[in-house]
Length: 366
Image (cartoon, one colour):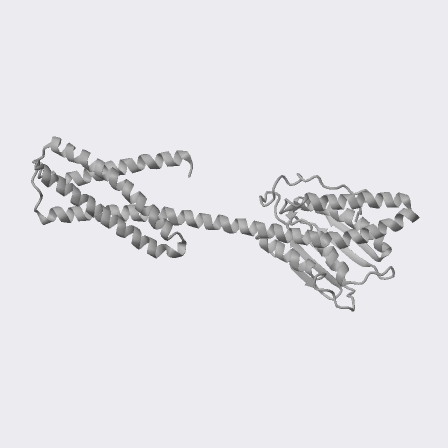
């Protein structure tokens, strides 16, 4: 609660204390023989007693909440809180009646209606105070629970992303360095281009850690650099076509989604120069992007970890509360359709093109 709201609450409490004392004093109106001076005195005494009562009730509520803090303990907390309210408010009225009797200024009321009215006022304040404070406490605990759940969820998302990134990096780096070693001996100029693309790819991997969504345009730049490395490694055994509209490039999706699906296609299918694996990325509308590959499945069983690409992407979309990807397989072409979040989506930390992404030295055009 902000300091301004706390200040308003304190003033509201003071007003309630004064009003409660006034209502209690009006019960003695006939006994004071309509003496406004005596009534004012009772009002003053009632205000002091109500102030003390408020301090006692506040301490009681705090002790009860320490004893029963959880939402699941609401029943016991409510019973203890209302029981304390009833006890202390009754005690306050008995004390006020005793003071009236000792002072002798006005006669002690004997009419049963008087005590019924007093009990009604007591019950009214018990209900008002009890319900108000319990609702505020419940809402606060609920808000804290939701925030804690969100914090845990974000931490889990980050851990999953870190594990995914760490899983991709070592194998990819090892294969890339092997390719670079061969290029340095055979074609130094091509080795330089390869090294530029390799640094761009790793720059993207490292700088995207803090992002939950990335523009499709940025993902495509990364894919172009990444495919340049694949092209160097596989040669004519792989082919990539990209057809994406400018409007679709503004859509957003979880980082590395395209990369994971390309790796998924490479892990499941054979790559041969006479039968190249044909990859295609297509997004003609800002609603979704299709990543497809020709089906030429490997005969050997794919390792469990290698199969994690598609499931990892699906899980990432689910964790970010995005529509799930769709899968189409007609036996000839395997397609994964990824929904695109609008550019205005605020899941991402920063502006859509805030991350300094790579620019491919050898972009692949459709």
